[in-house]
Image 1 (cartoon, rainbow, N blue to C red):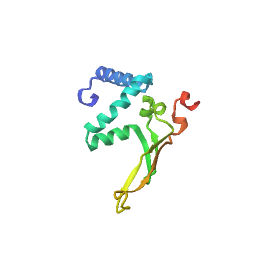
Image 2: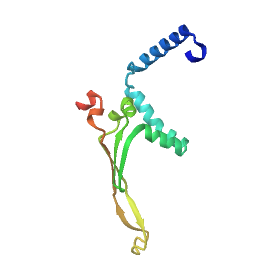
Image 3: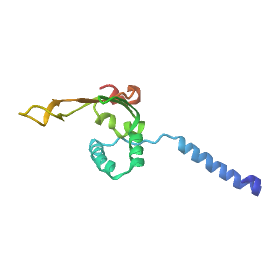
Length: 143
């Protein structure tokens, strides 16, 4: 600006304005954590949001919640939450270990008495929160 107009007072005003904006940007924002009810509402809205969005939206949603995911076969997923997910309170809402299990029937030849169902199993799938404890709020670390 100064090189084009040679208006030193205008340049000084512009620099002062930019300095004030930079200082304001450096100030921490005091945003309170969401209430338990707000976190529950948010979590309840996730299935609908997931269903309504496409692959790019799902990628953005997963990236906003998980800083890291490690999938270990069909039995285990370890994850770390993003700082945004922690600020939202998901560290408190999600258990340290979440176990999913279901009964699966395999179909095949079987016996004549039960020609369809040949085997019932109860596979387990574990989701384990590996978010470093120092990333969590002090109240969660003391728990």
